[in-house]
Image (cartoon, rainbow, N blue to C red):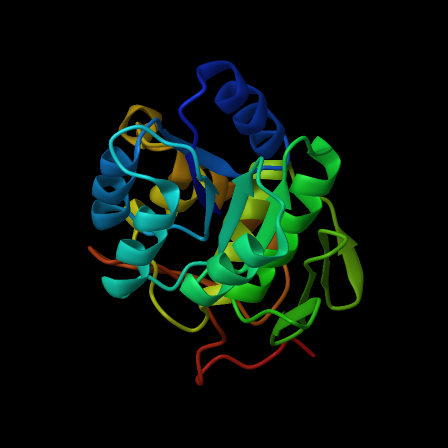
Length: 229
């Protein structure tokens, strides 16, 4: 999952980004409103964390322009202003949640997680494909009722594939959602994670992880594949 963090204070941005990355989010940082609008125009984000006090464009103006261009990702606003009228104005302008400074990092992480899940339409904590079960709140995976142990990055790849099932997901799309802005440097790591998932997930039948040549991967049960008896 990928987050755009809009914060002009470099030290604060690095602290917030570190906390989010430790929760397995990829984080891009924009230091002003214009940079944030540009990054939002070329990347898909699961959440925007937006500080209101920004150079080159106030955060409130950025929020308004972000919504007018059709972006629907949840927006968590950060501001030292906590007046009721300011909160109402921000929510009416398209913000999804509001956190007044100073705030506890743990609270920000909890709210970010809730907004990401809401934005994905995952009110339920269980995603299933055939007999594969992914419990997103606990990050627990089961296949045929048996617990599957996954490395953190393997889990992130699997959760994204399951959330997009039965659609085909390109390697580029996976990289963009798993890594920060300069994801190109990670090369062929997706193949490594998918290979590991196949060994752990597709030792059962039916096979669920399919390579679609020149297009990417799809996690789904093909109609001509029957479960192993």
